[in-house]
Image (cartoon, rainbow, N blue to C red; front, side, top):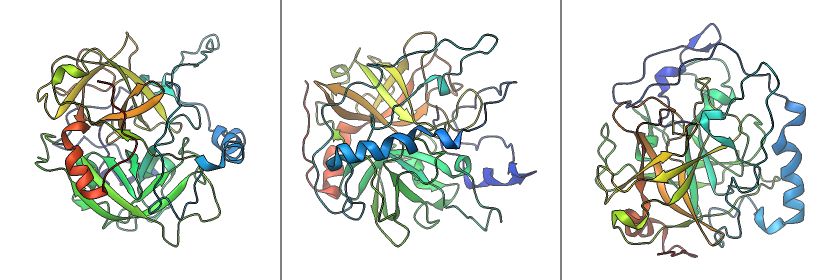
Length: 359
């Protein structure tokens, strides 16, 4: 999956596609090695989101709010959700073809992570290219919907190169599972961006941020999408309070094929007892030999722990350690600890409802 968004400079075209360039200087990891075989063509007529989301919204309409009210109307946080791998059925791969676990993660079923937000490049960026951007080019970062009009993400996701996502008219997209289905979800303009206190670019210290969004003329008024806010951690800051726990992170980041994933993916990790800055960071390592690690594009996505059926946001995808390659299981990924910034968050959003405490 993905750790870090690709800067605007990487959108330069080469024969109708993005030019391959080295990662920027501050990038602490490299992409996956490119695989020889190519992914199968996308099946637009059988897109799982197009088929399942409308029925979900018809049967449980309260989970599909009026898109014009999500930035202003208080809502209960998501609860009663199974862990994303609770009922995953695996299929045997066809003979002669290796299975691709996207980003060494697993596809999320529609409606299983309704708090997930996408930070999306605009469809057109004349300063970069004259062509319309496709869904891969538009994927930038992830985030989590935590309050009316607010998502939590990584501070390094506020800028694409030297351009702020607000000034460049990037958008927040809610209620989307498969970003290859471009008419799915609901999009909003970005009205404010706020770096976490003490954020240090380049070293990813205090790598957390808030993005405020609001509907505008481009917001899809007549559409409903499955979306719910997630509770955030308010537990103690001691490093050991989560040590050994299993957690799940989510994103559309780059995969073993060195391209973003269209379906939302989750990776299962185990939280380590020690991290470089225990007060403000969580280190977690993919479980098993095929365990997932974040890669380019997963940045800002949520790290979630389940408490008696309630998903709780405990971390934000930040970076990998010691220039670790995407998918390398020898080193843990680093997530910004949400509980360390709860007071700062509520200072912007107001008091957050539905906090789940499991410690």
